[in-house]
Image (cartoon, rainbow, N blue to C red; front, side):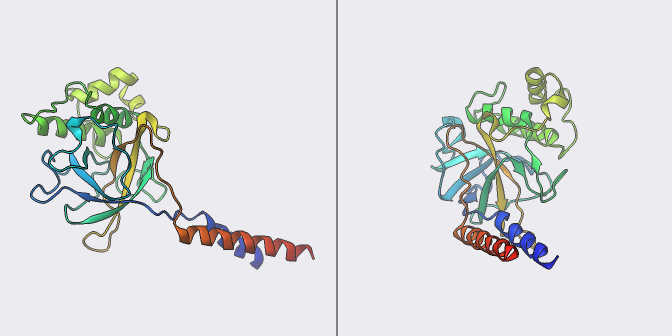
Length: 245
């Protein structure tokens, strides 16, 4: 029994999610979260500090806004927070939000098909009725953020008058259908899981969206994880051989 428990512990180490992920900053000097940030939601302006992915899928209206190398995004979790420049966040590319809000345990809450479709349209600069000019862009940003929170069950239904709620119903048939879980990378949209440092003891930041239509999400195990996996496999093999003697 002890040997079985020991093998289980080794396997847990082998599958532990350890990643060597990129880092990002939120906003830039003089803008806090970005030019078009509304209330607690997006548009947020993000810039990769290390290991930037290819952002060629973004339209000119939603990247390099204010500072070169940035892109515009929205958050998935209403109850978690990120803090602006010069704070740096580690990120892991995923298909779900981790902690925070409804369904926010360590197992994560998958992205909805409605959110994936809306953000892909936004990123390409083709989202109908989104004001990409400076005039009423904050109003569009607030309406889209409220729709995303509603689709992710982070907030209530944004209401029938919300133009982006209307759009996902026209696309998927019903509000409930638009809230269905998306497959990994649907419409080229992924989730950036954001990790501290944050005030207090929490390290889980407000997860953000990213559009990567061609480049696969970078899920590269950290060197320590590779080493642990090698040790685990060797020890499991040794125990099995020992039990057959």
